[in-house]
Image (cartoon, rainbow, N blue to C red; front, top):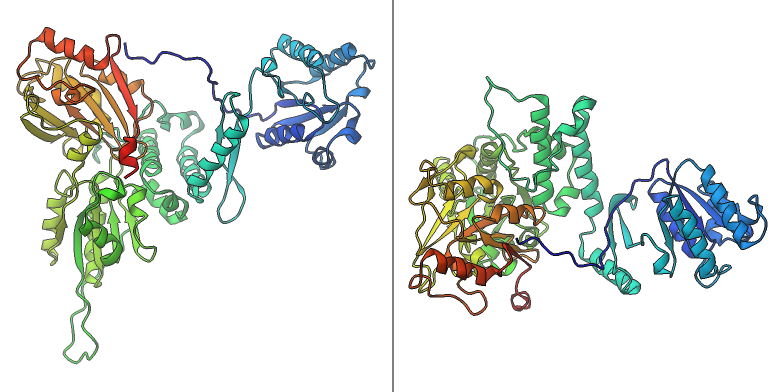
Length: 593
């Protein structure tokens, strides 16, 4: 199978909530102080044991003891003699008196404050192990059950208060100073508003949960779902949602906002914005009829507004057309953006231009679509240039057609500016030629989901064709079943696909966090489930072109066929014992362009 083989040397990265738990820190130096501070931020009770007591501790520990943030104990005053053996027994007896010790940190094994010998540290380590208490011993890896990562806790960009979000980096003992540098580089690359964004998302999540009875709070969590794009069943007035179903839908909306909105947009959300996300209410300003010009009006006539329907390409800003870039940076007064347009593109828009992001969440797509169209007409009537920004190309499953008709019916003939379609660019970034002599003579682009989440009829198997399915990754099991089940002629027009047919799932094509999962129809569902959370937007690329350019290539598919030959070329492509392959990021040469 294609499951990854474990390779030792890593750490199991965990985070702990330590309320009503105790962390015991041995030593009184600056390392002990840093461990104490980390434990306090995790809401732990902290006990510091140092030989010589308060006078032997560093200034920070003395101050925290005076502020009653920690308990600072003198080891010499524990009920024991001064021999090291009895010191350990005294510590053991003291820990036995504590209700719950989570961790022990031995920090006085570094140069400085009364350095402890390795033999003494090992005695303490053995005592703790006997009590099933994990130990960290500074600078002695063999006496460590856990290690500390190089961490950073983000503050609010306006108030300066610490926020819930933290990151940690570890090199697993291979370079602690380098871990600190990597941490700094990661922190510097993230938006300064990220702490505020986390607080806003946390507020929305808690709001949804608190509106439910306590016994139902867990029911609105969607942690078992690896993508926030999983369709939501449409309900009718005669069959309304239960409170739990409504909460699940709203929690999914929060997940959508978390996935798609730029960090600065999340951080800037007002109470009204958050309420609108949770309720689905429209934020659009009510329409007002255009002012009829007066014959006696001597002022300048209103500037004629206009609407531009613009394609943003697959994601990377360098793939914008010149016309699209000009529309965003020069012409726009208002940008109405689909949620799939990445922050890297939105960041090109001048700060003086208003930007709104469509709230197209599962279950309210039609309402959000109408909201965007109404807002565009309202702004154009006020004389503004409106850019309706869509991911990929507007007319390739971008609902551009209905928007053209809507705007035309309201007196505006929109200008449609094409974009690089993700249906073509996505496979290219995955190393898949959608057409290739000897492999793929035609290309079909289709959708994996119909209006209001209904099933669509997918194309049948054609050996000489590449099929690109957009908006199908969120319902991948159903798509695969429709393609491969010989009896399912309702959801497939034509022959069933062979189970060994090559397939690629391309996610966030052209972006730095692009991921491509290569497999066969037989194993692709398991491959995706084993690859972690999905990264919308994604597409399905199906056909022999998926393997055509791998390594030495295989462009004889149409000349050399048969099940045995095809299964052999799949084994050669994936590897004899592999069922899938995962590739992260874009080609280095592309990233350097």
